Length: 191
Length: 109
Image (cartoon, rainbow over all chains, first blue to last red; front, side):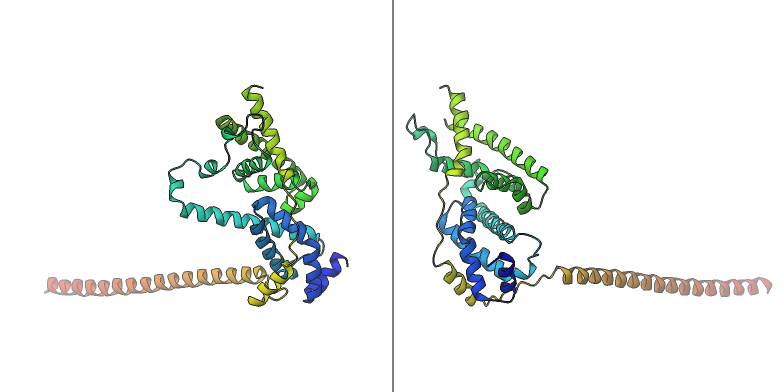
């Protein structure tokens, strides 16, 4: 069944079409959420929310746009909303963070304790990268993640973000520059 | 390898580490979980009504009404104030005229 037909049937409340939509997109959405959240259980919860949102707001979907892009946009937005709510919770809950310069920096691994030739393993590097990505402005973070992880084209990223291709180019360039600066600062302190 | 080189190499590796994130497999019970959640919250297809096109004109009308009522209130108030002050002036004028008349009469006498 084509996506357009699927949407039409979904608008009529057909449960079987919804099951088909979940089957078709769940792996894609789960992994999309995961690369923002870095936690399997949370990614699964957000994926669930994404599909419920798709079901609830299917009448707002414009048939001239791509279904996958629309669902993807919901997934990115839900993931970032979750991260924002977590940040807010942390801000209020952790009193000691008021006195520390940066609480995340304490939690990410320090290469000092690693073997000299294997400075950091990939899991640790992902944690460091996640810390640095969290410091970027939201649109730079999305653009970088979509381009690096999903290997999306600039055109596709532009559709998800609702900006021009030249803006995407600029966002990716700035995200890389900023990430390099932050990582340089981090490794200079920890290596 | 000096420290600067180490840092640069580690930065490159870190930037590329995102592509090494494991690919997650779909949860076979996801649809059941979604269905249960939807039944619990009584969610129907298209239940999220787009309210923008209703709310925007309604908000505009409410703001316009508030403005009109405020203007009408102040205009009314200033008119009343004006009539009150003219009445006061008139009474003062009358009082003054009557005093003046009395004085004139007194002078004539």
